Structure formats: C-alpha cells, structure tokens
Length: 218
Image 1 (tube, helix red, strand yellow):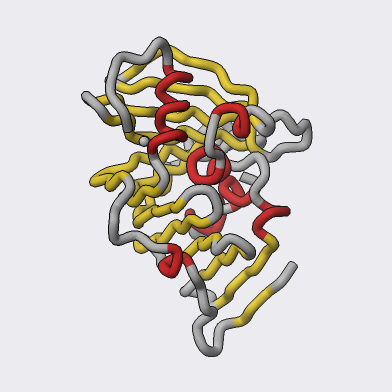
Image 2: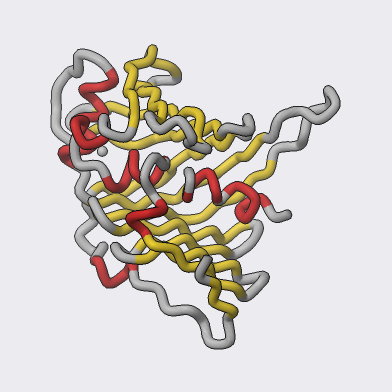
C-alpha cells in the first residue's frame, strides 16, 4: 500500500511577534495567535515498527500544505504519488489519483483530536486544551517543542510533538513528530514557509471531484 494512503488515517484520526518566550507553550500560543494562514512545502518520512526484529525501511513523500484558520486546510502530495486531502469547512475530501477515487467525510465529525486540529483549527491554547493535554518539552535542534496527547481514550493518535522555530519577531511551524496508536511514526518537516501570505484565499480550498472519479461516502 502506498505510503500516503497507508498513513493518511494519522491525519484523519489523526507561526509571529517578537521577544523571548518563557517556554515552548508560550511559543505555541504565539503561533496560534499570530498565524492566521500558512503555506509551506513539506517532506514526510513514515517509519513503521520493526517486524520480527527487523527494521522496516522508512517511506518518504512530499508536497505542499496550506491552511486558513480555523476551518480550511489542504495537503497536496506530489511525490511519490499524487493525493489530495482538502478540508473545505464542511467536508473533508481525500482524492487518490492512482485509484481515481474520492472519499468524502463530514469535517466536524472527523477532525477532533488530530494533528490538523493542532496546527490549522485551534485559535488559542484554551481551545486546544479541550482536545489535548499540552506539555512543554526541552528545546532541541534550535526549536521549541510541545508535546500534545489526545484526551479521548479511544484516540488512534498517541502523541504529537510540535517543533516551533523562534527567529527574531517570528514563530514558525518547523516540524511535526506524530506517533499513532500502532507505533507508526510520521516526521514532517516544513520548508520554504509563508506566514499569512496575501495571495491565499478560501476559494483555494474548494474541491470538485474529477470527472469519472469514484466518490465514496463512508
């Protein structure tokens, strides 16, 4: 099974003012407050637990991620396979170009305690704290880190570590380190980021199924 298709469930079930911050929770609060929209290239490396004591080769994919807080976001994977995950404010669309299949779910019922809720939906720490237990972690690799643990007991997501880079007057999302309930790890690095880009509009988060695609509504 393709890497993106295999681990998209981690997303479904599964950034600027100046100064010195007391800890990484302050940095996260500033990110939530000041970054109303965001666009970035990303590289995702997915590692599965070893099987029978033998390591499993990590899988790498890449694409572009964007959001306008609090209702819309999209992941557009381009390598190694084309796939789109689009939240338009009402529906969550998953398009697999190889299968020519679109899966549609209700956005509000699907997101909940997911990484998308962490970075694209919540507008402050209080809102985020309703879904996650947040803990400040030690700084590493020049980034402030926050650990988020879902509060719901049946969450398929185990933990998310949020890496934030603080540079002068700006807090920028740099990495996400996600572990699901099965021990699969997804490390996402954001590159060439744009904070509050002026040319990003809600219209860019609409999705129309391609002609001839099979549309599935679970």
